Every structure is written in structure tokens, then in C-alpha cells.
Image (cartoon, rainbow over all chains, first blue to last red; front, top):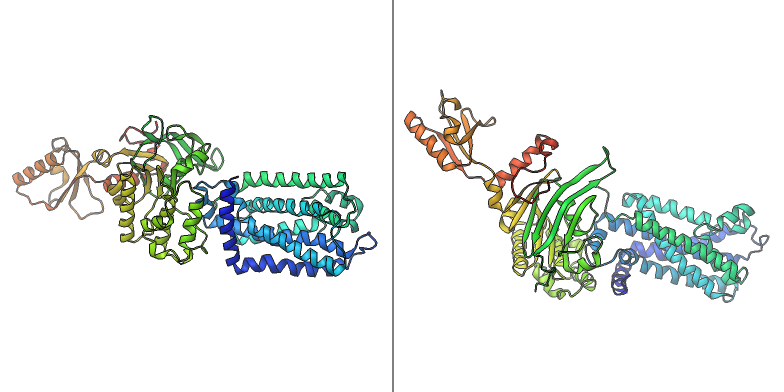
Length: 253
Length: 339
């Protein structure tokens, strides 16, 4: 990947991001509202009985919601719109590599998502009196790898969207699947054991578990962390491979 | 300034037995490009003409490296495959797509700067926009440009890197006459500077004005190729007139004596006759001598040499006769089309 090209295009993408009021609203406001709404959902579960603290659950939930709402959903919209308006095809005629074309629109959203997670998680920690993360490197690895995974998943998802309108449907299905299979809105600890064991190997679950274990220090041992990291990397590689194979650069004829 | 394009080979583009298929093999698929072949020399302007759906854009996209051919080869600058060697080819090529988009919230200047930041040795942005006549519109958002201005911006980006090889896919579509002539002026200037240009167009005048050589595509094949003179020479001239009442084409001298074939014009007025001939002077002389000898007046007499338009229309009409009508692929003109 040409870093000069990526930096140049990312600057342009940041300009475009800041000029789009709807994007700013979707990326900066919607996730906050959903995180706040999710606290009500979490109160329905017996978290204490599952050995969980509400504050810790909300921190990891924030990671999932922010990655899905601030990165996955809007990025699908941007990719499909650019494809339908022949912007991607035009970019491919120049010296810019395919990976840079795909990565650059994700950069401002990824930065916004990471900053947003940091701010909301800090606020939750302050309100719930959680203190600093026990293993901050695991939190960082989870969020950063999760960012790459979600960007690749967004690119792959566009293969199933024929138009800008259908992109909304595809992103809705995608983020619902990611939310309910990852422990983001329903902690795996309150689910039946065998079912939760299977979900631990779903794409976004390692992000939630790395963030939570990184904050609590529980389950932050080498073996558990490596398994989660490897699972996350495997899904990221699979999504990236699928995206590079299936991504369409121009509208269907 | 022209950079060296290859090692001793004067052809910048070599295309051999090129096929492009959409859809699956077998009956469900469609061959948009069917075994074309041609070469384009350094500094040459080569035009691809054709009706809509003839396969021009599908063919050019293979040359640009935007798609892989189903079969056949494209070689650029003597040794590069445009897909496999994309990194080496792209700094030396410029592309103006038939439909190319830009982020609409950027201004003209921002768009050019963005493209320049990802281009090897670009022209200064001010020079690029001035070249295409957009110097007064640099602060205007792309979404507020007219269709013709967007095409000019597209051309500015295509020429930003001073390419050795430039692909222009219907560059003047959507432009007003002034814009079209301005674009032709720019294309002539680029060609004079040594740029090799592949131009697709359905404007015959554009091809006549600009092309050194051209190919007429029809149903995915090259139906005619060569210089305009070569192509026109392969098509007959026409002598048309209206016979007076009481005379029929059978009363004319024998076609062999006229060196022409006789056809009545079905859509024209009664008595209208068209003679197709490769020797317009001889045919006209014979018909006029016959008319004088008979003492008849030929109304609406019209002697017309073949033109590119007529040649093009004859090729295009084959489509109406059915896509399989020219399945042999060529009509015998030129020498470069695929076997």
C-alpha cells in the first residue's frame, strides 16, 4: 500500500466527511444515543448473577456499537454511492492502488470511531467508578483490529447491495447480525453455555471480549488473549479476501 | 515532453485476438468483444467508431487494464500487460472514461490537487485547469458544474500526468459545440506533443477531424479499419436521379456498361434510381450520354462520392439485418482485424 497516496486521499476523505452533515450525525450522534438506549436493555439481564458489572459491560458494548454504527453502516453507504456514481471506477484509472481506494474512505470514520469509543468509555468508567483498564493494550488491540475487520466487512457487504437504496437494507441486516452474535447487546454470559461457546468464535465477539478483559483484567491471560486475537485476525483475513474477490468497482450493467 | 515508450518497438499498443465476455460461458453469456486485433503506433491518434453497443467501451476498458480479457492479449509500450503490470503502466497512461465520477462536494481545485497528489510528475494544478478552460471555475464544487464542465475536468485529470498514452472514451459527449471544438484543439495539441491517443466516439465528424487511423466496430468485431481514405475507398459512390414517367431502370444501359449496380430507392419518390459505383466519373458520363441520346431529362440528379458517414451507415445497417449477418467478422477492408 502506497502510504503517500493513502495519506493524501485520507485528507480529502476527512474534508468530505466534515462537509457531510448526515455523515457527521450518523457517525457522531447515533452511536451515543444507541449506547444510552442499550443501558435500559442491559438492566433486563441478571448481570450480577453472571458475574458482570454494568459499567464493564457498557464499556465493551460501546466498542461494538461504535464500530458498527460509526464505521460499518456509513462506510457501506459511502462505498455503494461512490460505486454507483462511477467515482471508484474513475479512481482506478490512475496510479492509486485498489487497497488505498478502499481504505481511504474508512480512515476518517475509523478515527471518529476510535475517538468516540475513547470518550464514551472514559465517561462510562467515570460514572460507574471503574478506574483505568487493567490491561490497556488488550483494549487497544481489540478496538484497532476490530476497526480493520469492520472496514473489510463493510467492503464485502457492498457486493450484496445493487443500489444505494438496497445498501441501507444490507447494512441493517449486517449490523443486526453483528450486534446479536457478538455479545454487544446481549452478554454471552447470560446465554446458555454451549450457545455462548459457539458465539465466541463469531466475528465481532473477540473485540467485545478483548475490550472487557482488558478493562477488568479477568480472562486477560496469554492463552485467552491469543485465541481471541487469532480469531479476530482470521475473520479479518477472510473478510478482506472476500472483499478483494467480490467487491464491485462499478454499477452492474 | 515525450518519454521513451518502449525498446525499439514503434507500436505503443498491440492487441491480438481480444475477446471479452459478460456472463457465464455458453448460451447465458454475451461476447461484447469478439476477437479484435490492431496496433497503434507511437504518436498516432487511433479512433474506434461504432454504434451504441458495438463494443467500443468494452474493448477500451481491456486496453486500460480495468478488466481482464476472456481471451487474447493486450501489450502496451512493447512489453506490459495493462492488468498484470498496472503499477508500471499507470504512470504513463491517462484515461477519460465514458462515465467517470468525482466526489461532488469537492471543488475543481481540490479535485485536481487530490489527483495530482497521487500522480507521478503532474502538471501544476493551475496549468491543468487552464488547459481545459476551467481556470475561472476552480472554486466551484463539482456538483455545481455543468455536464460539459465535468467532462473538461475529467480531461484535465486524464492529462495531468503528461501521459505517453491517452485513452479518451467519448470525450465530447454532453459538450456544446464550442466545448467540443475546444476539446478537439486540446487533443490536437496533445498529439502534436507526441502523445499516443486512443479515441472512441460515435461522432463521425470527430473521427474525421482527429484520427490518423480508425476502426469501425460492429457487433464486437472490427468491421473496417485503416485511414479514412482506405475505408471510404472500400465503399461505392452513388449516382441518383429520377426517371421520367414511362421509363424504368430496365431502360438504362446494362449495369456492366455503367460499371454500377442499380437499385431503386424504395422510400423515395416514384422513378427514383440509385446507382452504386466504384467509378463515379464513368457511370455519370454513361448515364448523361444515354439521357442525351434518349432526349430525356433526369430530375434531382445527384452524384456523390462515398463518405465516412455512408461507409459507417452501411456497416451499421448490417445490424438491422441481424447480429449474425456479419459473423465472419470483417468486410475485407484493412489488414489488421482479427481472423
